[in-house]
Image (cartoon, rainbow, N blue to C red):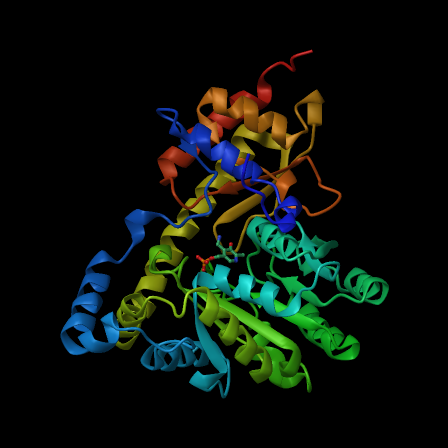
Length: 404
Ligand code: PMP
């Protein structure tokens, strides 16, 4: 081939998940594979009203180039949104708007990671973070988690051993683990960041999607309790899971110097996030529609999570082990191999496709030492009836005889 690509591309491979997505076109397949919200849940009417208001009231701003930091009225609305989630004293200038929180991760890679730098992530963690940080040459170190999130004792040992450039966590309803860091561990993680002077990234696209009781406050909300932690903390938020991913609206709160450098890098990347999307989001938030939208998505996803949990217990019984999620979009399950049944998620995923149901095996979500028995099941996009049918099909796949 006449084209010579950059060496950095050797650090990443096309995602195993993407390969699986190719199979999803099969007719009649029920998918638990995607990480998307349900498009039937989008508040189309609210967004139409908001976009019309943006064009009517502020066409110059909504259609013109804008500031790299973000559209000021949206920054103000986002700061107010965060204030509603116990984040005290957040000035609009302390956050920048990003093109999805995915861009915030990319900007962190650009501004902080040199080839060979160590980065600690949870095992398992968000696949695109693994790929993005690796593209910048990061050497990823996997920190173990349990149902209460990252294990802080192990995290401290890893920080001491590897002296990482940053620690990346999804403390609330992790993707893929569904796990939520306990309040006590949140405080300890903040203390660790200060003690070892390491940058701590809180990626939080799911924190608003809770079922029943609200999760503990974000690391950002708690940072005022731990002196010095705010100077090391980055918080990434997103409207993708609660409102609409197609808007591509995310935001990043970070110490001033890091925010300035990330803004500089963003300028060379996309100049700014779509002003039309920003003005629409600002109108939407200003109209006060968010609380009702959140109440609706929480209720629907809670019902689906419950339907999936019950079906898994009924259809797969002791063949599978999981903790019922308290929010987010995923059930993270582990095959037990009980009764000689399949204990490898990749094997079950292949057989499940033949039975007409798709999900993602857990393996690709680990940057090291994968637990091959794990599966990520999204309950977001199918309704309760399809979920039950999909799990019946999973049960059938689990019962199929192992091919010698
Ligand atoms: N972080 C995590 C943990 C995610 O699961 C996702 C989306 N799947 C993102 C970031 C990126 O979301 P977006 O760019 O749409 O805000």
